[in-house]
Length: 605
Image 1 (cartoon, rainbow, N blue to C red):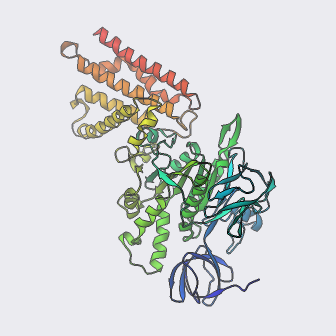
Image 2 (image 1 turned 180 degrees about the vertical axis):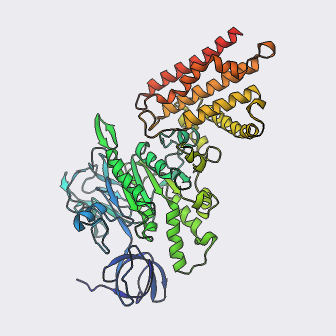
Image 3 (image 1 turned 90 degrees about the horizontal axis):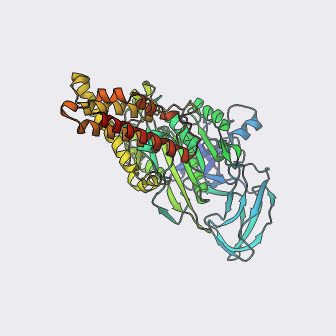
């Protein structure tokens, strides 16, 4: 065995270690530090010294400790076995480490292969024969991973190309089995069931495309007013206890994405524990059989009691995993909870490197790092054949201290993302969930998504616009009401206030712990919008048409349509797991009933 190339520790400052005798190393190379062989990554090179960000606790390291160079960048192993697993920030499998070490804590320097080397997978070769020419991204076979994720495609790694020399038949193989051998210019390369990829490098694609379909979150306030595309970016900023984690989890549970990558980056351990206990219990129906949704999910856990420096790696680990599934032609949703903790890790390391600080002590390159992370989202044409499209939607939670949205991380994120779901402390205190403040949130995808939503209902754009106007008017009228009371308002303004109250309390508010409201399919959301907006328009029209002695006021409308208003506020009690046809019939009938009630009112006058 070749002698290990070593350096020497000359300075230890928290997670930052400076070592000498490091000539010949590369930036972002992985090194093993000290007698415990802690995992570290080179982040600065100066002369013969290197600054290393260590991804484990450095207590006990001393000056003069040896340091082993690996010559490799920080890479992930991407292949069957990633789904239904939980990893730490540098893709170490926490479940297998726990079984080996019998400890609830990850021992320092533990070296366990990221993917299980012994497990056998059912492999079936696809459209590849000896003598074929293949290039990066070509699908050569398929593995059945589990009941929910039946097709895990085995692809030629992006930088490989050549003529196929050998193909293995269908059978059960471990992930290290060479299933295809490729020859190019006399060199033989093997395609195994897994591939390695450096985390800091985006995986290549043919071209980035404009998003055209919505990521349906099954949260009414988001799907109706602030939708995001498959391949879009969204930020969820909010103070402690406003429900950022709850929104991230709801997206992971009920969204229409094929794969979910959930990164718990620097959040409390109990939130990650909740994900681990909740997700395995959730199921979905596939071909008449119940399958746990954990089978389409992979978790990257780097909670607040785990090493600070590894938070930076955990974000890249998550997005590289997402890119791997995107390259297979799937729609991936990636939740980063939260990017503020990641930025704090950058601040910590930047401070120890004695770099010039910018606003609030964050490094000057904070905006550029955030942008390079969010840029890895998008809908793309994947490399290789057959031709396929995949997408990554990134939803980043942001935790501004004290809920102050002028914080550097929030303001930098705001200028990058296209969709902003601002959470409001006051709404959260009133137990209004999701506490998305409709007056400060926005989505720049509304125009792009209009054709998609109009396949459900041609009036969608108009309904959405009307709802926003009603809520905006209510906001303006509240000031008058607080100054001079409700009686000073005109009849049509009283009507607007009442309808806005219905929208707020019975449409935008959603109780995730009930059978009828834990999720809300798009057909139900649009049906509810149609009925509420239809009622508001009919009421305003009735008040405008009748004046003088036949004048119709809000009080008389309210008195004659009390039962109808009760039906409108009860719309949310329709159980969500019913067919689109059922919702369409139910809400069209209710809409007709609203119009009929106002026709009757007009005839009586």
